[in-house]
Length: 211
Image 1 (cartoon, one colour):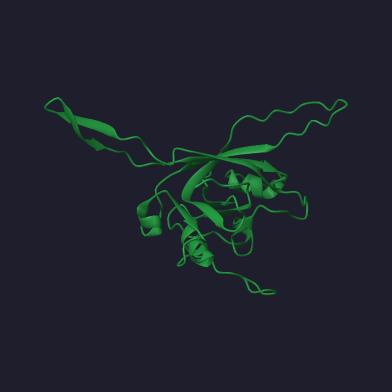
Image 2 (cartoon, rainbow, N blue to C red):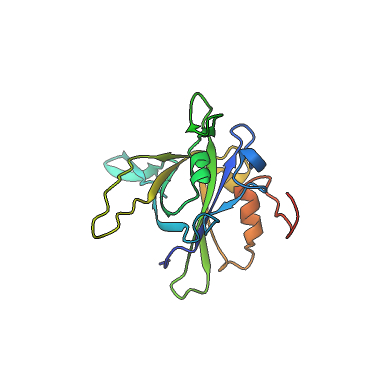
């Protein structure tokens, strides 16, 4: 199905061993979830492009008696490249697996990999329904960063981070697949179910309450 635009995106740091959503100081928020849709540093925050590659793999034909009779197919582990506008500085560093030291520097040091779950949200061409691409487990990396001088034109440099996916840490997630697709076009779909399965241990914080 053709889609139109980017609605929003969600991120959460997950425990490398249990797959549970990390909350509080070591996570991205009190309830662990981070929606990239504006924050106190920059209300324009959001994704300008999300390029997902490798959603499926091509079959490899198997031959016998001079004919192609069956095939083998490898398991897909897609990558998702997020180009972000005004992503929170601290959230970005945490997503990349960096820790804040006593001097106020973010460094990776010898820390274990930081694993991340994410959801990218788009919509149908008629703008009436949402479509979700959810990733159970991966590592975000930042490649190159190009800085340019302002001239008569302001030279902005947006963040580009690539999520490399792995198998879910929790076996039951997405029936073992690295990602899932969902939509409110399906009558049985509930967004809270998708949040709970993508970010195990997630519970919604009541308005004015604490998680």
